[in-house]
Structure formats: C-alpha cells, structure tokens
Length: 143
Ligand code: AMP
View 1 (cartoon, protein in one colour):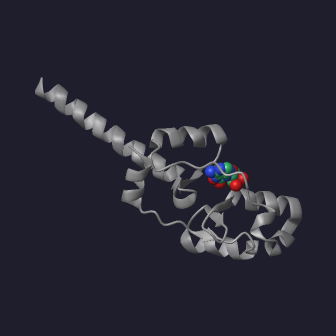
View 2 (tube, rainbow, N blue to C red):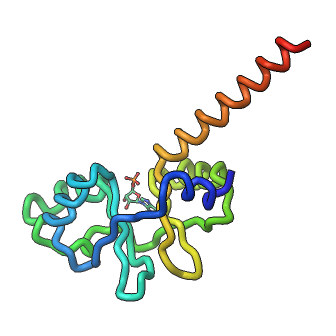
View 3 (cartoon, rainbow, N blue to C red):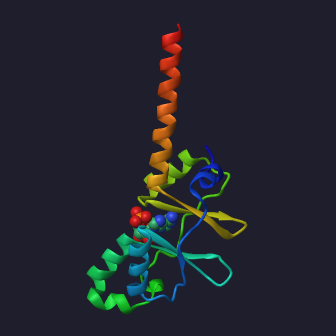
C-alpha cells in the first residue's frame, strides 16, 4: 500500500503551528486534538520543524517550567525526515524504526501534504495481515 492510499482513507489534515508559537499554546493544541506531534510550517506551507511530546519532556527537563513561554522553534527538531505520497507504507515504517520516531510528515512539491503516525502504520499492517490470514484460510478450506 502507498502513503497516498493510506492518506485517502485517514484524511490529509495536519495540525500545524508557526515556529513562533509559545510552547504553552502548543501543549493546549496537542491536548485539544488528542495528538502527539505538530508540524511547524513557514508562511509558504513549507515544513520548518516537528515538535512532539518527547521534545516537550526534553525541554521541561532542560529548562524547567520556563520552557512553556519559549517559542516552539527553541526545542523543535528542524531536520525533519519526510516521505512522499508515492512511498510504500512499509518503507515509512522502516524510517520510523531506524530514526526512532513515531511521526513522518508527507511532502509533495515541497509542501506539507499529510502526516503518518506509528498508529496509522500499525493499523494498516494489522488489516493487511488479517486479509492475508483470511485468504489463506479460504484457500485451505477449498482444497
Ligand atoms: P516521536 O517519537 O515522533 O514523538 O519523536 C521523537 C523525537 O524525534 C522528537 O525529538 C521529535 O521531534 C523527533 N521527530 C519526530 N518525527 C520526526 C521526523 N519525521 N523527522 C525527524 N525527527 C522527528
């Protein structure tokens, strides 16, 4: 399955922030939407960084509660690993495993086009494995 197909099913909406947004407000966004990461974009919808719960934990440990008034850009990851809609979901799973992160933004023509989380990838793999199991069971029963 391709990333484009997965996005068709789950939707291409991404919660984004400006790099200047104070972390206190980023935390409210994460809680409001029940998500673990936001993508920071510049004025032209280009990806400027990614900020996840883990960055907030790291920021709190490094700066204490004062971190909440700092801008997202102070602690976000600026070198973002992205994927293309044409990539296979299994390849994105490998990127996550190798890079030890749980979110991969989708980029098309230099612009943000969606996000894939580890939860989306696992859900997709479980559905595929179930299909394979059913096909195998049908084959055994018919022979
Ligand atoms: P996560 O597992 O997604 O919560 O992220 C763990 C760490 O990796 C955090 O420091 C994130 O900012 C960073 N991170 C998350 N996703 C990506 C990505 N696609 N590319 C680069 N770094 C990332």
